[in-house]
Each structure stands twice: as C-alpha cells, then as structure tokens.
Length: 310
Ligand code: NDP
Image 1: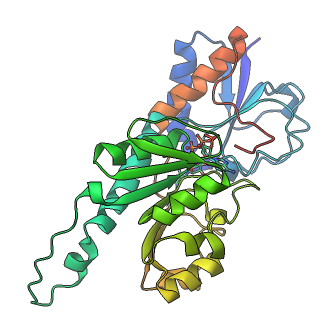
Image 2 (image 1 turned 45 degrees about the vertical axis):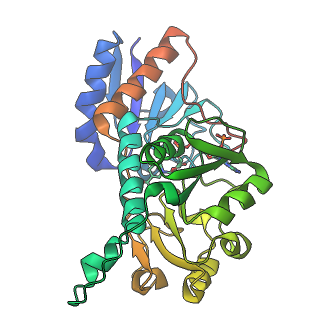
C-alpha cells in the first residue's frame, strides 16, 4: 500500500515542493502518493505549514506524524487534536539565511551605518567605529538558529553572550541560563538578538523590567517572534531613549497593520517577516528523511517537545 502524504500549506508552495518532495521520496525508495487533498482517514503524514488551514487532526486516524515546514511551531504545538509526533523544520538554508540577516543588522548598528547612509550633510566627522571585540552582543535563544548566529558573531570577534533555558557550551560564546543569567546577559547587551521560540514561558521576555536592565541606548533585533516583546514597554523604552533602536521582523499581528506605531517610529526598522525562510531544496530533504525514518521504523528527528512548546 502506498504511503499517503498530504501537503497542507499555502497553495503557492505546492508547485515548488511537489517535484522536490517527489524526487526525495523516490530516492528514498518509497511507494507514495503526494497530494493536497485526501480523505482524512487515508493520510499517513502531513507536511504542514500554518497557512494551509488544517486545524482539526481528529479525523486523521491513520496519521503517523506531522512534519512542519516552519521552524516555529507555536501555531500547532498546543493543538490538542494532534496526538502523533510533531517534527519542526531544521534546515541548513534557514540557518544560513538567519545568520546572514542577524549579522547584517548587527553590523549596521555596530558600525553606525545609518549615520553615513542617511546623513550626507557636508560635515566631515572622522569618528571610526570601535572593533567588534569592544562590542557586546547578546543572543537570547541558543537553539539551531541562535547557536549558528552566536557562532557567526563570535567568528567576527564580537563579545557574544548567549542565553538559553538549559546550560550550554559553545566555543567563543559566554553561555548563561536561568533568570539570573538573563539579568547578567541583558545588563551587558549593547545589541540584543531575540531567537527564542514563542511559548507561554517566553512571552514578554522583553518587558519594562528587562528592557530597563539593558545599557542605555541598546539596540534590539527581533527575528524570533512578536510575543517575545511587550510592545507598549518597548515603545516607551524607545521614546525615553533607554532603547536606541529596534529592528523588528516579527509581530503579534502579521502583516503589521499600517496604523501600528512601529511603522512611523523614527527608531524602529520594520521588516516583513523575511529574516529567513525555509529553503525548499534543503527543506524537502529534511521532510523526506523523516518520512523514510517513519517507514523504516526509525525515530523521527527534530521532534517538538509538546509540553515545552518548541
Ligand atoms: P530551537 O528550538 O532550536 O531553539 C530555541 C532556543 O530557545 C533554545 O536554545 C532554547 O533553550 C531556548 N528557549 C526556549 N524556551 C526558553 C526559555 N523559557 N528560557 C530561555 N531559553 C529558552 O529553535 P530555532 O533556533 O530553530 O528557532 C528559534 C525561533 O526562530 C523559532 O521558534 C521561530 O520563532 C524563529 N524563526 C524566525 C524566522 C524568521 O524569518 N523571522 C525564521 C525561522 C525561525 P534550550 O536550548 O535550553 O532548550
């Protein structure tokens, strides 16, 4: 009997993924049917993205696993109708894209590039920026993306502090954890990068109290998720100068509504959730490998801890 694989994502992704997944599944030697529609009780695997609209998994009685195309799984991790393993996306292309984006925005702040790009006023002010060794960047979240980013910043000689839930050891990065670790990290963070998942435990990680711990004028880069930041607290901190500038890629409501104060704030850069995206060529290999594993009776990789939500 063939393995039935339901592709449930934004329709525009189907023509991109269909040939890549089909090739990968053939290479894995599987007899399969890959489609965007099935009778629910005939489906073995769901390739999932939140914008595919699939919310109720209870009729999917034969389901073996849900394989997310996205790294962030907050839209599905607490779905009580889902009782089979949930794997998230860990994709080399996604990590590379995130690293490039964070490094670029960090360098923008570090080198004071806005001054030279936006202020061409004929005034010659020869102030060279400090070296990266003199700049502390703090990366909150040291998972797949946070670690790759922290390592890239460390390779550029930034003084990198990382923070995570559990203790870590990463070469060139001072790793902290727990609430005291967060306070220590933020109190030194001239630039704070948020790469935490959106879970009940991480909501409003950046709030009035934690924003006040930052050195005055610190910069925030958030490619993680919108709910990591208390927006009112950030706007207040921006208005008081406690936070010098914020680059925000993700928001509680997306697309960010045109009337949202972030758009017009002189010290905010809004980017439209483009920090990094799943790259189909590499991501299809990850999905196919997990289906191969499932069919071979091997453990799935990149499983989500449903209790922790990531
Ligand atoms: P991982 O699951 O690999 O890593 C998550 C990290 O966050 C881990 O280091 C984890 O700690 C830490 N963490 C989780 N909860 C807490 C907590 N309560 N306190 C302290 N640390 C915590 O995720 P990824 O690195 O793959 O992705 C991170 C996020 O990036 C995604 O969840 C998604 O929201 C976002 N993302 C954004 C994209 C964009 O384009 N803007 C693209 C892709 C992802 P520990 O290691 O101890 O478990």
